[in-house]
Length: 382
Image (tube, rainbow, N blue to C red; front, side):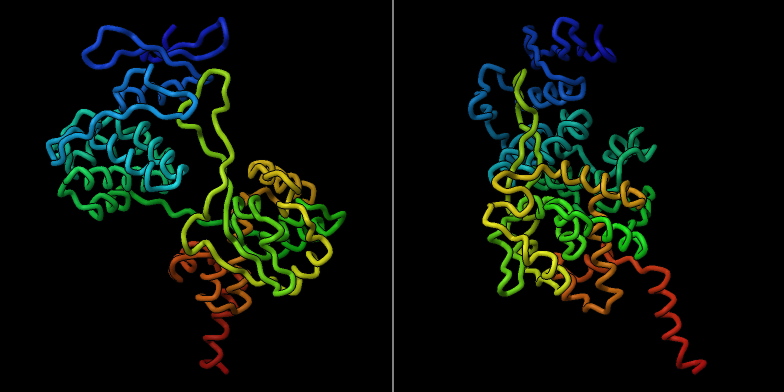
C-alpha cells in the first residue's frame, strides 16, 4: 500500500522501500529503491530536479548528466536555476557543503517553489508558502536549520538574477520569533568529577576527551588529528584537517549510504596552531606514538564512536549527559573566567572574529557574574 498517496510503499519481498514516478510529459514510470521512506522521497525529488533519465546515472563515478543551463534572467524556473546553482556549488565548495545544500533544497524548497518563475518569488511569497508551513509554525526545526533554508533560497534567487535582498529574507526568522536557547557547559564540579575518571586507567580515547576539554577543538578535528600535528618540542598543536560522516549523493541497493570524509577544517580560520598547556603536556608527554592518528593508530576514528565514548564516561563518572560540543563551550568559558584575552581565545578556537567567540561560546557562570558585580561595587562601598 502506498504511503500518504505518494506512490511510495514498503516491499515485503525484500524489506526495501520503492517509489514510482513519471517525469513531466512522460507516460513511462520509473522506480527508485532505498532502505527508508524518507530516502526514497529524497531520491524521487532529486531525480525530478535533474529531469534526467535514470540510465544516465553512472554508479562508478556517482555522476549524473545535468540538464542544459537555463537562460539567465529572472524568467527562469526556480528548479532550473537551483539545478545550475547546485552544479556550481558542487564544483566550488566542499562535498559536505554541497550535500547539505542539496538536501535542504530537495527537502524544503523544491516541493514549494520548484515550478515558480524566479521573477514571481518575493518576500511575501516566501512568508506565505514557506514560513507558514506546519513544520515552521510548530517550530519543529531549529533556528540554524531555518537560517540555512533561507540562506539557500536567497543564494538561488541571487544566482537567478532576482532583486529580492538576502538581508530581507534572513530577517524573516527574527520576525517569526527566534528562540533563545541557552548553551550548556559543564560545571566546575562536573569537570573535576569527569577529569578524575578520565585520569584513572587512561587510554587513548580518555586522553582524547581530556584533549578537547583542554584545547576546545571540535569533534571532527580530534578524530582526524595525526601525531605529526603534535609538536611536543615547541608545545604546539596544528589543526589542519577534520573528518565527518557524509551522505553519498546516489546510493544503490545494498551499498553504504554514507562514508567518512577527511577535508579541510570548517573555515580558513579553523586552520590554526594551539599552544599546549603545562597540564596537557604532562598528560601527553609519554603517550605520543609513531602511529598515524592520535586516537586510534593507523585508522580514522568514527566521530559517532567518540561521542558514544563520552556518553559512557559521563554516565560512569556520575555527570549528566551533554553533547560532545559542550566540551568546546566549557573550554571557552574556562578561558574567559581565567582572564584570557578575547582575541587570543578567538584565534585558539579558530573563529573569524571576536564577536563570534563572545556571542556563541562564552557563557558567564553565576560565580563569574557575582565576582564581576562585586568588583564593580567595590568602588562604591569600599
